[in-house]
Image (cartoon, rainbow, N blue to C red; front, side, top):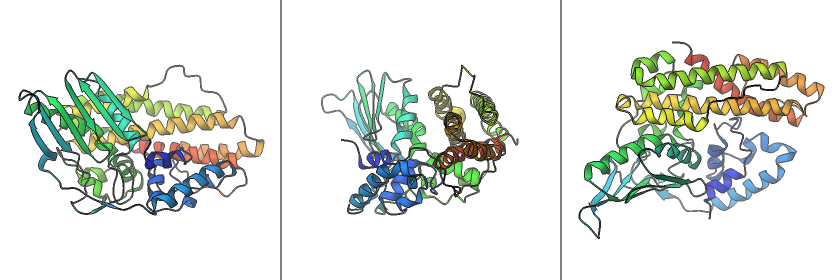
Length: 383
């Protein structure tokens, strides 16, 4: 059975436009479930075609508001809960770790530890050196296998290991996993994932006082780095040549996004036959996150990952707008074109327009996430 968090996310537009005040529909649904936001905060759910979706979300909220709050567990040193021999042999170890989410023991916990979509996206980058990696978005947990060893990543932040060859390998594997999935950790103050918050710090100059900035068991995040806009120059300066693939990929995606926007402005269908594989793109940054060059530089590499995720969302958004343009009337097309022109400069306002045209409003929602990507990329270019 799927988790209530996943079922509630399914009762959203799944556009990730950010017009509700939360960066993604996943973070919006979490905020609704705990009572931080009303369903009406999402302007897209006010459209006639989303009436049934809105009713489902309101029902889910009413049920969830009756649940009992949890409290944060103890914070083990280095994330280690225990390490001991397996029951059937002293030559193999079993261990349990916890990815710290920034919440002190005993404090109320309202949200799950991980955003399941980001958790599963990032776990797919762990296929090397492991033989098999599976992750359930419905349930929000993952499984890893390699030879005799098995690992389970649970929604409450625990990482269980079985039949590991040595104590050194136990710590090495946990550090590898934590570095890859840390961006999926959900902040207790707002229900947003770490990657979205890192992107927001760059877009809106938000002071990163979120508890999630204290997350991490095998390493720590740097709040000063989180405050600064990410540029190509400061990533290169911090990490050096190991970041070259990440920088080249972001430059390529920048060119692709601008090209797609220009095509949309001209009303021409996209002619590109070859595009960057989004899974491959994420794994390039995940590999960098696991490298020795990243140690002590985790925050800036995570900001690069947050930029990548924002740009990929922007590419999805402009393609959706391009598809919708063929369905617009003359007046609707003219209005949407004016929005696209604003997006080209990253100056679209984050307020849904007051119009009777629902397709214009939907186009605006998609364009807002394109606008976020353009604003981040404009800063990326300022070395």
